[in-house]
Amino acid sequence: MKKIFYLLFLSFVFIACNSVKVVNVKYAGKVPKNYFLYTLPHNVLTIDLEITEIQTIRGPYFEYAEKYMGIKDAPQINKAEYFISGSDLSVFAEPDSNNIYFIFPNCKNKISSISLTNSGILASINTEATEVLEQEISKNLTQNYLPFHSKIFTELSQKDYFKEHIDTIWKQVKVDTNFVRVPVQKKTIEALTFEDKAKETAHHIMRSRKRLFKLLSGAYDKIPAINSVNDIVKELKNEEEEYISLFIGKTFTRKYNYRYYYNPDVQDCGKRKEIAFFDSKKGIFNEKTSNSQSIMLEINNNGTLSKLDTAFSKFNKASNNKGIVYRVPEFATFSLFVGENLLIEKQIPISQFGVLCTLPNNAINKKHFIEFNPSYGNIIKIGKK
Image (cartoon, rainbow, N blue to C red; front, side, top):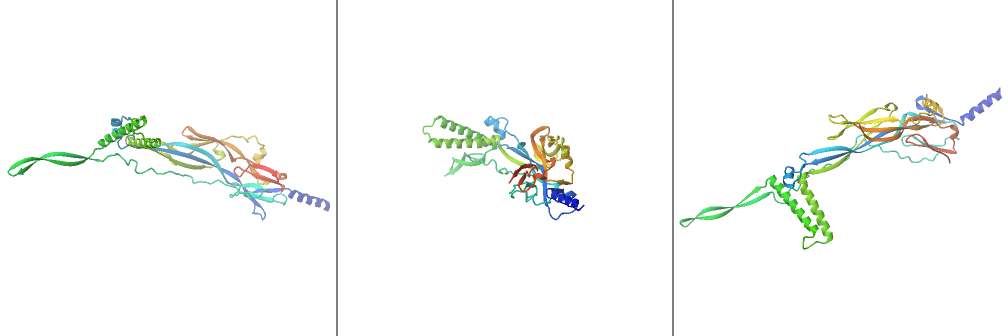
């Protein structure tokens, strides 16, 4: 009898020294004295949108664009237009609160070290600690842009705004006993009308074009050096562009960058979720406006792991496991729509859509190392030291 009891005891010790017990903290009755603690990753979707604003400022002489320059359809009002110029979908990992585990290494020949990320996600077993870089997370809604200049049209003409008139009047002057008519000049200054300035500016543009044509066609007797010609041509074109803008206005462009986060859930698959709202005349908003379109996210599970053994699916509910629990992520297709128009579509692995698996105990010992992907929880490599 004693011999049988002794053999049973040895068998228990042998089994204990060759197993690693893993317990989800949700099912742990109390905090143990000796343990390792790790978490599996949970993926959060990052939605990045770039919005471009094109703002058109009408020129001060817009009313006379066709009359003096022959330019039709010059902008009559100031306006702003917006369009989505860029988009991207990506994921980052955060600790999964539903998958935090205690490890009880019952025998020292199994686990010598565990490497975790800064947030506690399992990175490797029985390897030297390595620095794991984690993604920076920006705020939910970000904007980065430079404001427009407050003064847009600073040079409306190359001449004065005032015109001097000299009139001759006759004045009677008494000389001795006779009255003599004497001419007297009277100088008056008056401001030019806006139309006069527009006409003057149009003439200046034509003169500038004529000078440029003569320079390029070699009509001048004295031609500047080649390097000087290039500089002169550049300046004349810049000057013409500046004065033309007084009639046709100016256009400015700036960009806004927005970032949204979405926590994918299996129950969301096959549905569309509103992320934000876009208005081509006002930009992007968090609330719906009268003319806005919904920016919607659609998630579809690709089902690549649907044929895995049923035991793996049941393992998700297990409380006690022999072996390290890890994940095989599932691919999902993410589609971003503006109204009914597809903006971007991507296939991305999602940790929480995947299957929980157990690493066999015979694969865990001090002679072997195991590396995990901290972004998705899957095994990257198993090798000998």
